Amino acid sequence: MCGIFGVYGHRDAAALTQLGLYSLQHRGQESAGIVAVDEGGRARVSRAMGLVSEGFEEAEMMELKGPIAIGHTRYSTAGASAIENAQPILARVRHGHIALAHNGNLTNAVELRRALEDGGAIFSSTMDSEVIVHRIARAQAKSPEARVAEALEGVEGAYCLMVVLDETVVVARDPHGWRPLVVGKLGDGFVFASETCALDIVGATLEREILPGEIVAIDEHGLRSIKGTEGAPVHRCVFEHVYFARPDSKVFGGSVDHSRRALGRQLAKECPSPGADIVFAVPDSSNSAALGYAAQSGIPYELALIRNHYIGRTFIQPTQAGRDAKVKVKYNPVRELLEGKSVVMVDDSIVRGTTTRGLVSLVRAAGAREVHMRVSSAPIISSCYYGIDTPRREELIAAQMTHDELVRHLGVDSLGYLSLDGMLAAMPEGPDGYCHACFSGRYPTAIPLEPELLRAGGGPR
Ligand code: 5GP
Ligand code: MG
Image (cartoon, rainbow, N blue to C red):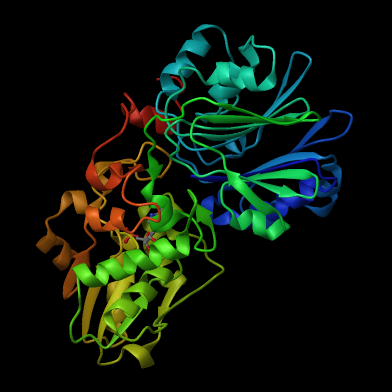
């Protein structure tokens, strides 16, 4: 997963992009970068490993001049976590440059890369996204948006793209619409972002979603759109509402706060906890769902787990040992609220079960009498190939254990997951038009032939 942000037509484009990236930090914490294009058409790039707050020195920001900028926060799903894989990519090509920022995961990147390499292409990263840059460089069409459209023919999987071709910004969203992307207005300029919370931070007003299959170009002549796939079935990622997006965002046109509360209410209906004394969230991702659970059940909501905000998303730790140690560093229970109580712990999802297991033992050690785990999504049983980092089924605990085994393994008194239907019914625009492959195993497209190679970046075998 990743966050992308772009500005066209504002003299502080790079500074606004940096602000936008702060609001998209939750979508990726491995690296951050900005490409800015000045009035003379010169592109400059700054990229660094780590957080947005760490990545850009003031002096460097001063260098990123011009009215056009795009930015990226990265959380790797294809290609290693390393500086050569930081985005945006900036490539010098015949007569100009191509800058590109990508959110999503291409499902046929390995095959596309091989075909390009067979033709002599040289890759400088192991990201799936780099194949798109090569294909744009080769495209023959005249207009920038037609070149991007030509490059995307035969590219499969999930993508939201921000591309700068010389002094034209082109944004594109794949026909399935897995990942969110919006356009807003700021004065005479335009702002593009993965989530609306990034429009808020720069004071832009939301215009609309970029539609699935749409390609939008913007240059000195204004904004133009190619709408490719109207009427085709869409598969927006339900996990954006469950976990990924921020609750102060609207994604796919609906409020994430609303959908999470609805998930929590539905969970309380399907999996009540009679006799429990308090409900609490595993902060922050399940706060809104736990509020919904408390409202529906009438059980008081408490802040029984305190989260250290100077620690990132634990899941992002690449090794199991790193993830284990981080649970304690990240969360501490409030003993005064838990001692002697029967408690409902609400989380949005269980992936590997590592965090959950660690938390249950912390909560018990703090004196809880009974721990009832409630999860505001269905069991995750299948890998995602469209941009969420849950690639191997063997690591998905709900795919490996029965319900009773899970109860024992997690150390809870009871465990309740939301049903797939209940989860989809809580979506703001109704249950249709969502991808739920990670919960149902029903993939809307062909899945990668060589998923491990895709993760590794499709390099030499
Ligand atoms: P687990 O118990 O599976 O180790 O961890 C569950 C926690 O991981 C939940 O609190 C959930 O919010 C979080 N989570 C679920 N999916 C993701 C993801 O894709 N990335 C990150 N960083 N955390 C996730
Ligand atoms: Mg969480």
